[in-house]
Length: 384
Image 1 (cartoon, one colour):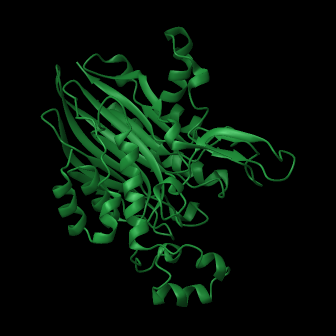
Image 2 (cartoon, rainbow, N blue to C red):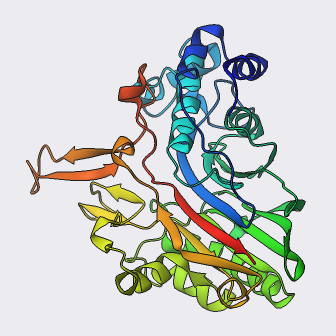
Image 3 (tube, rainbow, N blue to C red):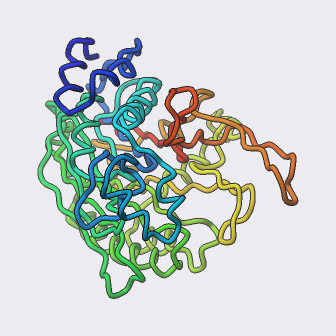
């Protein structure tokens, strides 16, 4: 765990003002990384993690300080000027959001992740700042064509058994999409097991949202599936993770297409199938990683497993590197949740408990700020 002095040096070096430092210095214990024989992997949609600086060519004006002249000028001509100016995204508020993500990490039992997939981050600058706060020494960021500047990234800590090899971005064919979307990030590692060094490929995904037609997610599935299939055929181990933005109502279902072509296992499905015979009470497991109150494209009171892990068959059957399905968690505890009460409509007065405490970008205090509209997910890879 960082000392306060070290944290202050880090935060000053990344441009966090002294007025915001106190947000970070509340006593928290991040568990020591006890990963002699395992690799912990985490995926987390952190909900609009933007810095306070405009990225040229990107529509990130909503997440700029209202004092920024570029923002005020842009918002005057925006379709909804009031909405455009609704978030005064200042440096202290940005610092607070980084701190809230850190607090989620501090609450994880059983050890700190060595590999961390990030979804809904703005750029490499944001990832480097978050990595410094959390203690990750390595990070890779995709630089995709999304109009808002939303990207995916991966942070990692190498060890004697985990070494970074290389990374590349996979772009979806823009001619098959209605608008540009996020790249898929491929990060290759080598892992030392009893059978020697093994190849491990991580794919971080953020597929087009439910505001887009299902065909856009089919394009993502058709792009990724043959790449994963080839990686598995070459003898590599694979974990594909992230926010796939796919729900059971999608027809045809892009996730079914992806898993069948790529030949991978959906870890959430494996977990839910095996849990009842292993003493795990599914009633205590969150129904999904995201709760949606309802809209034109998703029904009311909708729980969906938008965030998933897909793993190669080798990680289920091969003895030297195996996914511990029972370690899979949709990570939730009372501090990360809230209640949602319907104010009007057919569900007026009904309350749904234990939903993700989504982030309030206008909050100035942690108690009101929340965390994200997604729960993070975790798994352990055993090294034998």
